[in-house]
Amino acid sequence: MVQSEAVQVLNVSKSFSQGKEKPEQVLRNISFHVKKGEIVTLLGQSGCGKSTLLNIIGRFEREDSGTVLFGGKTVDRPNRSCIMMFQNYGLLPWRSVLGNVELGLEEQGLNAKTRRTRALDYLRLVGLEDKADSFPLQLSGGMQQRVALARALAIEPELILMDEPFAALDTFTRYHLQNELLRIQKQSRTTIILVTHDIDEAVYLSDRILILSSNPGTIHKEIGVHTTKPRDRGHGDFQHFRKQILEQFHFNGAISAAEFSI
Image (cartoon, rainbow, N blue to C red; front, side):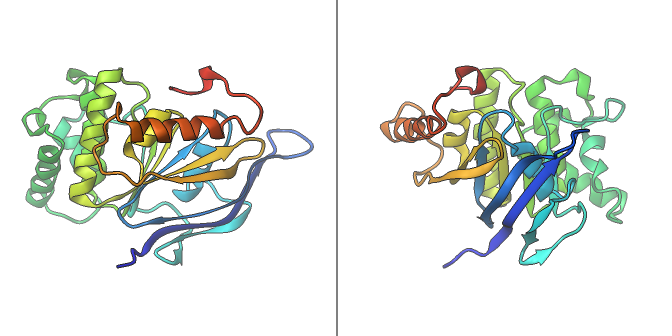
Protein backbone atom coordinates (compact mmCIF):
# COMPACT_ATOMS: atom_id res chain seq x y z
CA MET A 1 0.00 0.00 0.00
CA VAL A 2 1.38 3.40 -0.96
CA GLN A 3 1.67 5.83 1.92
CA SER A 4 0.08 9.24 1.38
CA GLU A 5 2.32 12.27 1.59
CA ALA A 6 2.12 14.36 4.75
CA VAL A 7 4.33 17.18 3.45
CA GLN A 8 5.53 18.31 0.05
CA VAL A 9 8.21 20.98 -0.32
CA LEU A 10 8.33 22.16 -3.92
CA ASN A 11 11.12 24.37 -5.34
CA VAL A 12 11.49 26.44 -2.17
CA SER A 13 14.04 29.26 -2.18
CA LYS A 14 14.82 31.82 0.52
CA SER A 15 17.12 34.84 0.83
CA PHE A 16 17.93 37.27 3.64
CA SER A 17 19.13 40.82 3.09
CA GLN A 18 20.55 41.48 6.60
CA GLY A 19 21.21 45.08 5.66
CA LYS A 20 23.30 44.15 2.63
CA GLU A 21 22.75 45.60 -0.80
CA LYS A 22 22.61 42.14 -2.32
CA PRO A 23 20.44 39.56 -0.48
CA GLU A 24 22.20 36.37 0.58
CA GLN A 25 20.48 33.27 -0.75
CA VAL A 26 20.13 30.71 2.04
CA LEU A 27 18.04 28.05 0.25
CA ARG A 28 17.73 27.32 -3.46
CA ASN A 29 15.14 25.13 -5.20
CA ILE A 30 14.56 22.73 -2.30
CA SER A 31 12.15 19.91 -3.18
CA PHE A 32 11.27 16.79 -1.20
CA HIS A 33 8.30 14.97 0.31
CA VAL A 34 7.62 13.25 3.61
CA LYS A 35 5.21 10.33 3.89
CA LYS A 36 2.86 9.91 6.81
CA GLY A 37 4.56 8.12 9.69
CA GLU A 38 8.10 8.75 8.42
CA ILE A 39 11.05 10.23 10.26
CA VAL A 40 13.01 12.34 7.79
CA THR A 41 16.20 14.11 8.87
CA LEU A 42 17.73 17.28 7.44
CA LEU A 43 21.47 16.86 7.95
CA GLY A 44 24.15 19.39 7.16
CA GLN A 45 26.88 21.69 8.40
CA SER A 46 26.09 24.83 10.37
CA GLY A 47 24.82 27.60 8.12
CA CYS A 48 23.37 25.39 5.38
CA GLY A 49 19.79 26.56 6.06
CA LYS A 50 18.42 23.52 7.95
CA SER A 51 16.63 25.54 10.63
CA THR A 52 15.41 28.11 8.11
CA LEU A 53 13.88 25.30 6.06
CA LEU A 54 12.24 23.85 9.17
CA ASN A 55 10.78 27.26 10.02
CA ILE A 56 9.41 27.57 6.49
CA ILE A 57 7.76 24.15 6.75
CA GLY A 58 6.23 25.21 10.09
CA ARG A 59 5.10 28.48 8.43
CA PHE A 60 7.04 30.59 10.94
CA GLU A 61 8.90 32.06 7.97
CA ARG A 62 7.77 32.46 4.38
CA GLU A 63 9.63 31.27 1.33
CA ASP A 64 10.55 33.75 -1.42
CA SER A 65 9.40 31.26 -4.03
CA GLY A 66 8.09 27.74 -4.15
CA THR A 67 5.31 25.95 -2.28
CA VAL A 68 4.79 23.92 0.89
CA LEU A 69 1.82 21.54 0.92
CA PHE A 70 0.29 19.67 3.85
CA GLY A 71 -1.85 16.76 2.72
CA GLY A 72 -1.91 18.33 -0.73
CA LYS A 73 -3.12 21.72 0.55
CA THR A 74 -1.32 25.02 1.10
CA VAL A 75 -1.14 26.43 4.64
CA ASP A 76 -0.44 30.12 5.19
CA ARG A 77 0.22 30.25 8.92
CA PRO A 78 1.31 28.08 11.85
CA ASN A 79 -1.38 25.71 13.08
CA ARG A 80 -1.84 22.93 15.61
CA SER A 81 -1.47 20.15 13.07
CA CYS A 82 2.26 21.00 12.96
CA ILE A 83 4.22 21.45 16.19
CA MET A 84 7.82 22.66 16.61
CA MET A 85 10.17 21.34 19.31
CA PHE A 86 13.42 23.13 20.18
CA GLN A 87 16.50 22.50 22.33
CA ASN A 88 15.34 24.74 25.17
CA TYR A 89 12.14 22.80 25.97
CA GLY A 90 9.99 25.96 26.31
CA LEU A 91 8.37 24.84 29.57
CA LEU A 92 6.71 27.41 31.84
CA PRO A 93 8.52 27.24 35.20
CA TRP A 94 5.50 28.38 37.21
CA ARG A 95 3.29 25.57 35.91
CA SER A 96 3.47 21.96 36.99
CA VAL A 97 4.46 19.21 34.59
CA LEU A 98 0.77 18.39 34.15
CA GLY A 99 -0.05 22.08 33.65
CA ASN A 100 2.61 22.38 30.95
CA VAL A 101 1.23 19.40 29.05
CA GLU A 102 -2.32 20.76 29.39
CA LEU A 103 -1.24 24.15 28.05
CA GLY A 104 -1.69 23.28 24.40
CA LEU A 105 -5.14 21.81 25.10
CA GLU A 106 -6.61 24.88 26.76
CA GLU A 107 -7.57 26.53 23.48
CA GLN A 108 -9.25 23.41 22.09
CA GLY A 109 -12.48 23.84 24.02
CA LEU A 110 -11.94 20.74 26.13
CA ASN A 111 -13.28 20.63 29.67
CA ALA A 112 -10.89 20.34 32.61
CA LYS A 113 -11.45 16.62 33.14
CA THR A 114 -10.80 15.78 29.48
CA ARG A 115 -7.65 17.95 29.42
CA ARG A 116 -6.30 16.28 32.55
CA THR A 117 -7.06 12.79 31.30
CA ARG A 118 -5.36 13.36 27.95
CA ALA A 119 -2.36 15.08 29.53
CA LEU A 120 -1.90 12.19 31.95
CA ASP A 121 -2.19 9.70 29.07
CA TYR A 122 0.71 11.35 27.26
CA LEU A 123 2.77 11.75 30.43
CA ARG A 124 2.30 8.02 30.89
CA LEU A 125 3.46 7.49 27.31
CA VAL A 126 6.75 9.30 28.00
CA GLY A 127 7.14 7.61 31.39
CA LEU A 128 6.54 10.67 33.58
CA GLU A 129 3.08 10.17 35.03
CA ASP A 130 4.62 10.12 38.53
CA LYS A 131 6.09 13.61 37.92
CA ALA A 132 2.75 15.25 37.06
CA ASP A 133 2.77 17.52 40.14
CA SER A 134 6.46 18.42 39.90
CA PHE A 135 7.76 21.65 38.40
CA PRO A 136 10.24 21.90 35.50
CA LEU A 137 13.15 23.07 37.68
CA GLN A 138 12.80 19.87 39.73
CA LEU A 139 13.46 17.74 36.63
CA SER A 140 16.61 16.80 34.75
CA GLY A 141 17.15 18.11 31.23
CA GLY A 142 16.15 14.76 29.77
CA MET A 143 12.92 14.72 31.76
CA GLN A 144 12.12 18.28 30.68
CA GLN A 145 12.51 17.27 27.05
CA ARG A 146 10.16 14.33 27.64
CA VAL A 147 7.60 16.76 29.09
CA ALA A 148 7.98 18.92 25.98
CA LEU A 149 7.42 15.84 23.83
CA ALA A 150 4.32 14.88 25.84
CA ARG A 151 2.97 18.42 25.41
CA ALA A 152 3.50 18.25 21.66
CA LEU A 153 1.91 14.79 21.36
CA ALA A 154 -1.08 15.74 23.52
CA ILE A 155 -2.23 18.15 20.84
CA GLU A 156 -2.22 15.12 18.52
CA PRO A 157 -0.47 16.89 15.62
CA GLU A 158 0.01 15.35 12.22
CA LEU A 159 3.63 16.57 12.06
CA ILE A 160 6.32 17.33 14.64
CA LEU A 161 9.29 19.47 13.62
CA MET A 162 12.35 18.92 15.82
CA ASP A 163 15.27 21.37 15.74
CA GLU A 164 18.30 19.75 17.43
CA PRO A 165 16.03 18.57 20.28
CA PHE A 166 18.69 16.47 22.07
CA ALA A 167 21.81 18.53 21.36
CA ALA A 168 22.07 20.03 24.87
CA LEU A 169 21.89 16.64 26.61
CA ASP A 170 24.70 14.32 27.67
CA THR A 171 25.39 11.28 25.49
CA PHE A 172 23.62 8.69 27.65
CA THR A 173 20.50 10.82 28.10
CA ARG A 174 20.47 11.56 24.39
CA TYR A 175 20.66 7.85 23.53
CA HIS A 176 17.84 7.11 25.97
CA LEU A 177 15.60 9.80 24.50
CA GLN A 178 16.34 8.64 20.97
CA ASN A 179 15.08 5.20 22.00
CA GLU A 180 12.04 6.76 23.66
CA LEU A 181 11.29 8.82 20.56
CA LEU A 182 11.34 5.70 18.37
CA ARG A 183 9.08 3.84 20.80
CA ILE A 184 6.58 6.69 21.01
CA GLN A 185 6.66 7.44 17.29
CA LYS A 186 5.99 3.79 16.48
CA GLN A 187 2.99 3.85 18.79
CA SER A 188 1.58 7.22 17.69
CA ARG A 189 2.63 7.03 14.01
CA THR A 190 3.33 10.76 14.09
CA THR A 191 5.31 12.15 11.16
CA ILE A 192 8.61 13.79 12.19
CA ILE A 193 11.06 16.07 10.40
CA LEU A 194 14.29 16.34 12.39
CA VAL A 195 17.14 18.83 12.03
CA THR A 196 20.53 17.68 13.31
CA HIS A 197 24.25 17.84 12.60
CA ASP A 198 24.79 14.58 14.50
CA ILE A 199 25.45 11.87 11.92
CA ASP A 200 24.91 8.97 14.33
CA GLU A 201 21.59 10.45 15.45
CA ALA A 202 20.48 10.78 11.83
CA VAL A 203 21.33 7.15 11.06
CA TYR A 204 19.78 5.85 14.27
CA LEU A 205 16.41 7.63 13.93
CA SER A 206 15.73 8.22 10.25
CA ASP A 207 13.82 6.45 7.53
CA ARG A 208 15.43 8.90 5.09
CA ILE A 209 18.24 11.42 5.42
CA LEU A 210 18.45 14.55 3.26
CA ILE A 211 22.00 15.89 3.14
CA LEU A 212 22.14 19.64 2.54
CA SER A 213 25.01 21.49 0.94
CA SER A 214 25.79 25.12 1.78
CA ASN A 215 25.95 28.57 0.18
CA PRO A 216 23.13 28.36 -0.76
CA GLY A 217 21.48 25.37 0.85
CA THR A 218 20.43 22.70 -1.62
CA ILE A 219 19.67 19.00 -1.27
CA HIS A 220 22.88 17.27 -2.26
CA LYS A 221 21.89 13.67 -1.56
CA GLU A 222 19.00 11.58 -0.25
CA ILE A 223 19.85 8.38 1.63
CA GLY A 224 17.21 5.83 2.61
CA VAL A 225 18.06 3.91 5.77
CA HIS A 226 16.16 0.68 5.18
CA THR A 227 17.01 -1.34 8.27
CA THR A 228 14.86 -2.30 11.23
CA LYS A 229 14.58 -0.11 14.33
CA PRO A 230 15.93 0.21 16.95
CA ARG A 231 19.35 -0.02 15.32
CA ASP A 232 22.60 -1.37 16.68
CA ARG A 233 25.21 1.41 16.54
CA GLY A 234 27.97 -1.18 16.41
CA HIS A 235 26.49 -3.22 13.56
CA GLY A 236 28.09 -3.19 10.13
CA ASP A 237 24.94 -1.79 8.50
CA PHE A 238 25.01 1.21 10.83
CA GLN A 239 28.66 1.85 10.09
CA HIS A 240 27.97 1.48 6.37
CA PHE A 241 25.43 4.32 6.42
CA ARG A 242 27.64 6.42 8.67
CA LYS A 243 30.57 6.02 6.27
CA GLN A 244 28.34 6.76 3.28
CA ILE A 245 27.20 10.02 4.85
CA LEU A 246 30.73 11.09 5.83
CA GLU A 247 31.88 10.48 2.27
CA GLN A 248 29.12 12.75 0.98
CA PHE A 249 30.44 15.64 3.05
CA HIS A 250 33.68 15.59 1.11
CA PHE A 251 31.86 16.87 -1.97
CA ASN A 252 32.91 20.44 -1.17
CA GLY A 253 36.53 19.48 -0.66
CA ALA A 254 36.75 19.29 3.12
CA ILE A 255 34.86 18.52 6.27
CA SER A 256 35.40 20.07 9.67
CA ALA A 257 35.01 17.72 12.63
CA ALA A 258 33.90 20.71 14.67
CA GLU A 259 30.81 21.05 12.50
CA PHE A 260 29.51 17.57 13.28
CA SER A 261 28.97 15.16 16.11
CA ILE A 262 30.62 12.04 14.74
